[in-house]
Picture 1 (cartoon, rainbow, N blue to C red):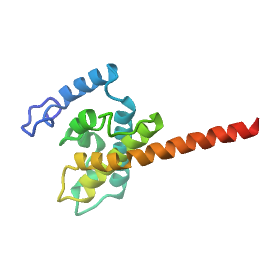
Picture 2 (picture 1 turned 60 degrees about the horizontal axis):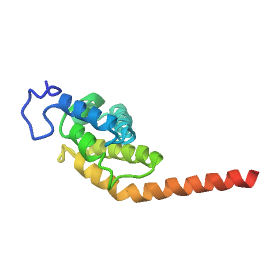
Picture 3 (picture 1 turned 135 degrees about the vertical axis):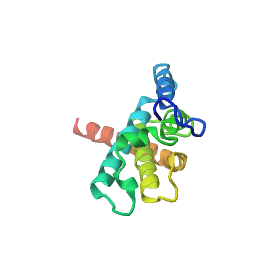
Picture 4 (picture 1 turned 45 degrees about the vertical axis):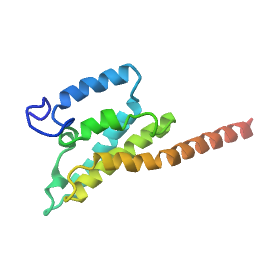
Length: 154
């Protein structure tokens, strides 16, 4: 029901189906980076799986499967329209994968570990935006070191 928007909710969180269509359009027109989208989904799946294994008797959010996190709240909206914003995110291709992974892991930690704050997508994007220049710097430095090693072998 939530996937098609038949449940009431805030703007941007009711119809995951329409957000999916918009996301496909943005990726095919190269406005949005598929690396950020897939990195966020992978980070979300990994963190949800870890927390599902840990479990909790007092917090039922530890047992919520990953596909529920994808369709509840503003996760899909933030994933497609906010995380893929090209100015404040990572600029390198590997950095975009890491940036997306940071968003996915952070949003699940905020949602699950802190039951008083059931959303967390925009806060996770804000944290990842703070780390984006650092991520890019590490990726660039690793690339430089790799090229220097290749030059020293010749």
